[in-house]
Image 1 (tube, rainbow, N blue to C red):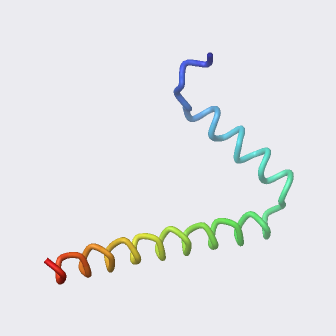
Image 2 (cartoon, rainbow, N blue to C red):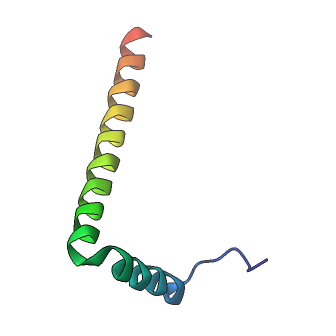
Length: 56
């Protein structure tokens, strides 16, 4: 429907709307939590791969 691509103007618009809704402090906390979640997920995937290699 829209071409399937998200460009810089769309990303900036989404960030502006998020800033208006959540405010600067909540947005910083949300980003921190998202970063920690991604880091934990990557760590769990890496540990799972190492565990699978040890079983082989």
